[in-house]
Picture: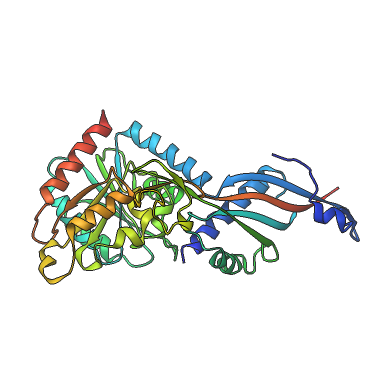
Length: 245
Length: 118
């Protein structure tokens, strides 16, 4: 929207029209009043529409570095690969060690490099999908950059958001990173096998997660031993099925 | 430092808006940015990131004017409407901590000021 209104302070300083050596210039105020997330949100909605048409369920998986995204994902692929076609997009600032690990478990995988950026947005996700080719997939997992702040702010176009909180990180993370827990549909509390060695209060953790998002589902798991993984796989099965309806 | 990523998103948006407004070749003078106090964005870091992101670009000399707006939330326990930063992120009425932010959660570009040819 162009309003052509001239800013008060500029008018007072009589700089409204200046004559430069070559041309006349005029000061113009372009009024926007638009969220800096508006473009990304719009792009994300369009992407979700395309995923619905294709019947591909896109899951955005987030966590801090080292919470166990890759191990959890490897286990999940093992459990579900006989029932559905799974693809994985690994986003990292650099390297392809995660992609190599995932490939060994029998899912199609592509490595995305964010070039130093701390998160993925809808545009980057779509670019990755086009390169990857997602036709025929039932479940596509986007393993976001390990970070609890930036990835939560940018809608990737995913159908659902999941995050992994590991026991050593502490039960108070939902208080420290409120937005991350607010945007997540499911929170996996990983590494429950080491609970006896940490002052991690599971009840408090669930309470804090629900303070941020009363609808969020909390599933305690241990990707290494397999504990709780069946509940997580069930949740995924249900979501993929719902999305295809 | 998530402000760095936010500055990047902002630059993309500025490019797009200037193109749409037919002002892609104009010299940008000032950008007015409104930050909600519940957005989790720190104005000081935003200014620092802006300098880093615009360094040696066409936006290098642009003034970034930041104004903050108050944020309000609803208490999910008693329904009260409150300003969390004033009450220590607790409901002053019932002491509840389940707050649903309803305003001041966003960051918006209010206006862009440019010099354009007559």
